[in-house]
Image (cartoon, rainbow, N blue to C red; front, side, top):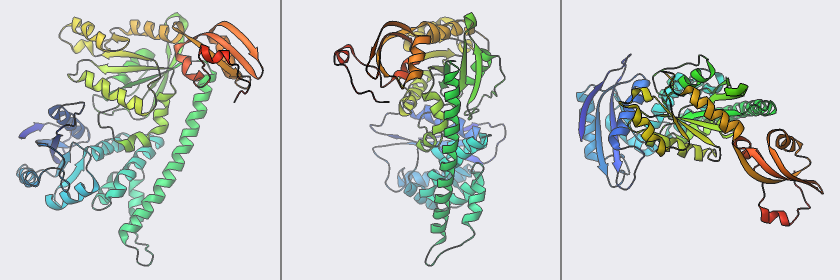
Length: 452
């Protein structure tokens, strides 16, 4: 099926044709049409001017060209007819698919897939040195097995370091029998190793900061959600701050932390994080590990959902999948159904609440439901207690202190090497006691060997 369309862009640059494929038996979170609509938004965010699209349904991807050979010829003709300079596939292409398609489409058409397009957007939006390093690492790891024509494209777009490595790769300092391609791969491999070492320093720095925040006893709430769900706008309302906001995908990459005053004089730290998206490239998840650990270490997750979007539930599920991937599913969640001011009837939001866990309807832009949300956050962080039985060695003095200061102790027994405590803790603190929690059955067999 072919559909020509025009998506105006504020700064139209290269004319772009989109390609979407539906594989029989593979159900995505979004339908083919909805996924292509999202791809069009990604293209526009990257500064491309979408001029048309082509779709195909297949039993399985073509081994050489992903789409059928006839579709490739049709694609080339349509792209030339629409004067397209770029073709973007809605799936990640293998290195072989990329090479074969580039040959067949010709050197006048630049080929991208969904992953490289998202990487390009991240490269444009990364502002801090950490963000640029993370994007650069993701780009290199994606392009390394595709090191042919794509190398010049990588050198042009890499966030902060691509140009430097590209020029180094082009020097041509080759050993006996070594091709330029092998030199480029070796140079990129070294650059990847260097970036990973730098990001480990960033990770260690973040860990020290998290430890300081934990010692302050202020609970940490991480805002998560699909890209463009309104997380930054909501954070601005909660904290009365001025975090950068834009009506575009991936407007915020670097985590931002703000102190929020909750009812009753309680306080908490709120961290805004990068938005998620369906088919989030694994290279990005790996590269942004230090940033995403901010989510996994939070006491509470505030998942923001754009309830006015027709695929809101699918977006929610995409975020849930990513949270599972980064081992954050154990953290308590409150769901903020945002943008209710865009719904035709307010009762639509109330009807939708039952589809989401611990949900509340809000409008960050119109300041609707903010007071109620703060009350729910306070209750979740400070007033909701969970029964727990733990056996802690005396070396875990910090955890013993937390239980005494923030929990409600019902029974405490001092044993050889440690202490047995039964009581209730705020739900946000339960994760800190992971590994020390025991069942009543385990209590009967007293442990004599406490491991730190």
